[in-house]
Amino acid sequence: MNITPDSFSDGGKLFRQGPDLDAVRRRADQMVADGAALLDIGGESTRPGAAPVSEQEELDRVIPCVEVLAELPVTLSIDTSTPVVMRESAARGAGLINDVRALTREGALDTAAQLGLPVCLMHMRGTPQTMQDNPRYDAVVEEVKAWLLARVDACVAAGIARNKILLDPGFGFGKTLAHNLALLDGLPGLAATGHDLLVGLSRKSLIGKLIGRDVEERLPASLGLAVLAAERGARIIRTHDVRETADALAMVTALADRGSAGE
Ligand code: 8Y4
Image (cartoon, rainbow, N blue to C red; front, side, top):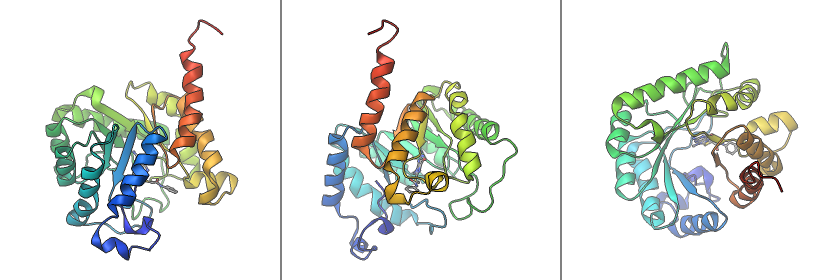
């Protein structure tokens, strides 16, 4: 759930008084009813070129939502790079830190370690402002994996338990179509690190580039990618379309759970 003015139909005018908490709650209830195991809540827009948000603005957007959603029977994941947002969210029951900057911001590593929460480390090349300006890699899969494992080492050195560290190659974050496709191919290699893998492919522009669909027409392709990623070792799928994705993944799980006994 993106708690930012640009994701609201009024273009942000009503948003100045803060997020519409009734609407947030209704949307969250629906996602839980549809089968979500985690809800990811973020107050910073990370779309390419988006303006940075102040700490206070991020707190004003996120914390009221955490308070409203804390009683739900799912893990609240906080999409933030900001230590004070991590702390205030954890104090209200958040259960996961999802950081697109992989705890590189000043104080983030020590804060996450102190809080003892699991963390998702995502790879991004550059910043949201610049990341899509001609990103280049020599060998994208190897570079992303090595960078993530270096962040794991930093986390472990700061006192974060290895089994609380999830990894995410960051589809669309400083990657061309070719890079994103290479990373899809490389998912089994990332899964082989032993870390739980989280991926976000839902509605992303690689779908538009590959098969020419506008963003509101990307659900079927997103479901295909979710199944593909799960088959290649992803454990958590970040999606906008919970019910449909849960059904698609239920098929993957049902087949896997059959085991080798047959039938
Ligand atoms: C259409 C719809 C086009 C959505 C682009 C987008 C990830 C993430 C985002 C991800 C992790 C997004 C916060 C981008 N993506 N966190 N966050 N992994 N861990 N773009 O892939 O959904 S926001």
